[in-house]
Every structure is written in C-alpha cells, then in structure tokens.
Length: 380
Ligand SMILES: NC(=O)C1=CN([C@@H]2O[C@H](COP(=O)(O)OP(=O)(O)OC[C@H]3O[C@@H](n4cnc5c(N)ncnc54)[C@H](O)[C@@H]3O)[C@@H](O)[C@H]2O)C=CC1
Ligand SMILES: O=C(O)CCC(=O)C(=O)O
Image 1 (spheres, rainbow, N blue to C red):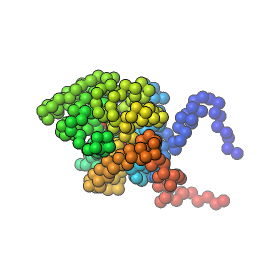
Image 2: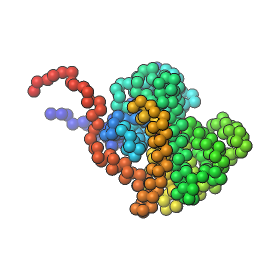
Image 3: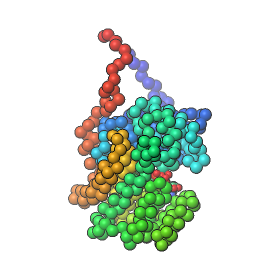
Image 4: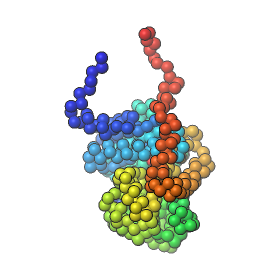
C-alpha cells in the first residue's frame, strides 16, 4: 500500500496548497551560471503549455512563485479566449535583467526547458529579449519568438502592441463613439518592448502621452521619438501615473498595479494595457466597475504575442497573425457589450468566455503520449 505523505511540515503543506490548480511546477537551479528559475504549467487541456519567461529581481522566492503561478494561470485563459490550442504555462528567472544575465544562463535554462520534452514552449516576456532565447534555442527546440533569420516568427512584442492599439480603438469606439486615437490622452506605465511600440504608434496618430519608466534611457528615447513627430510627452514619476488626467491608463509593466491603493486614485475613463495580471485580485474588477472605469481584460487585449508564437508552431504566416490580432478589436467590444447586457464586470464576461471553452475539454491533453508506446511490456 502506498505510504501516506507526511504533511505535518508547514512547507510541504504550503507548497501543495499554493500550487493547487496547477499541473506541474518545476524549480530549476544551476549554480554555475546563477540560474534560479521556476516553470509553472497550469493547464494543458487545450494543448502543450505556452508562455514567455520573465526575468525580475524578486524580493523573495514566495514573490517569484506567486508571480509565475498567476502568470501561467493567465495563459490558460488567454489561450482559451483566443481560441488557441495551447495550454497555460509561464516561467520566471530570479535576477536583475540588467546585471545578472549571461548567454550561459540562458543555455542552462534551455536545457531545463528541453527536459520537459514539449510540455512547455517559451520565449520572451518582461526582462528577457530575443537574444536570450537565441542562446536557449541552442539547447532546445521548444523556444518561440526568436528572430526570423534563425527560423522564428520574430519579435512577439510587435503583435502584442498592435493588439493593444486595436483594444484602445475599440474602447474609444465604445466610450466616445469613434475609434480615433488622435487628440486623446493616454497614460503609459512602462516603455519596454511593448510599451514603447504602443507609445510610438500613439504619437504617430497625434495622441497626447503621459509616460513613466524606471530607466532614464527609455524616457530619453521616447522624448527623442516625440520630437521626431514634432510633439512632446509629459514625463511623471512612477507613483504619479495613477493620478494623471488622462482618458485611458495603459499599464505595460508589472502586474498587480490595480489594487486597493491605486484604484481610488484613478481619474481615467478606461484601463487598456499589455501588462499581465493587472488586477492584484479578481474582485477588484468590481471596484473599477463601481467607479465607472471601463477595464479591458488584460488577457484579451494583450493576446497578440501569443497569437504570433502559437502560429509559429504551425508554420508562421504573417497574414494569419495580423488577421487574428485584428480580431482583438471585436473581442473587446463584445466583452464590453456582454458585460453591459448582463450587468457584470468586463472580467466576468471574459472569464465566462474562456470557461465555456475549457469546460468542453476538461481532461489532461494527451499530446505527449499520443505517438508513444511504453518501452516495457509488462504482463499482468
Ligand atoms: N512581450 C510581449 O510580447 C508581451 C508582454 N506582456 C506583458 O506586458 C508587460 C510588458 O512586457 P515587455 O514590454 O515585454 O517588458 P519589458 O521588460 O521589455 O518592459 C517593461 C518596462 O517596464 C518598466 N518598468 C518596470 N517597473 C516599472 C514601474 N514600477 N514603473 C514604470 N515602469 C516600470 C521597465 O523599466 C521596462 O522598461 C509585462 O507585464 C508582460 O508580461 C504581455 C503579453 C505579451
Ligand atoms: O508574447 C509571447 O511571446 C508569448 C505569450 C506570453 O507569454 C504572454 O502573452 O504573456
């Protein structure tokens, strides 16, 4: 008879409580390169797990674990809502992307990804770049979003930013009766791979921008870009971005930025951004709703990158990616309309949409075992 696991120690109890709802969590440790990473596979009902890898200087292991668990769960919803046959997964590398990275670290990481044998596909996220994954792809095929010259589909932050622009147009349509980006004011938090591209598109369209980032060099770069369009941006400190007099808040950095402290400060009419897990907790969608702030569910509006990397695994096709990314406009509008009709939050409307798809296929995906037979034939 199987021995019962001793759960008397708090640590083991905690860990299984924490990862409850996830299929698998893998801790990766490579002291020779300093790699400490966590890969979380939330749900593979729809297909192998797919999701980027974030590098961030987490204050504690708990913070890193919490982030990766929420991010991977978000990917399950994102795939389900976008009708993509992949599951939810994500990874985090603990460290400062400006100081702690090395090619060797990403090669070591690639080996860990490879050991999952296709259960998890990954590429860039916050703090990681295509170059990092060129290194990782020397060790594994389960990498996406590397440059086209190496056979990848290229920078996934391009379709992510395009998708957010479609989301912004849909939001303007719903709120103001037309799509025009011009003349409205957008407060952008984070000018990285996605945020900078959104800012550039908005400036090109004649929008007004209030921006913040923690790195002075990206602030200088956006000021230079604005000057090229004969305009200027307003720069504010990190914590001032919540109280600006903008029409729409566009979070493009960390998650959890919509919380009990920040929501009361918001003066905007809508929140539409690329950041994953913008709400610190799901119930906060109601706080936004009560303040009549329209919230574009993050996993709907930021699905452009996922659309591109998932497409790559079927053989990349830029037109197909563009068409599907465009459909974010309609998806967002329908969610706003459904929420209004049913008097629920926009997050509830989005969650219902993915639950319906997941419930149709509530079993573990057999993608990995389909073509294999056991090595040993054991007679009963
Ligand atoms: N790269 C992609 O295609 C996708 C990204 N996302 C999400 O979008 C967000 C941004 O991703 P990337 O642009 O790839 O990351 P990135 O690392 O390229 O850029 C993030 C930027 O945010 C800034 N930042 C960090 N903390 C900040 C703070 N407190 N205040 C102001 N700025 C701050 C950083 O300095 C950096 O410039 C993340 O939440 C990511 O998970 C979602 C879908 C796809
Ligand atoms: O954008 C990517 O490269 C993959 C998808 C992803 O990780 C995300 O949507 O957060």
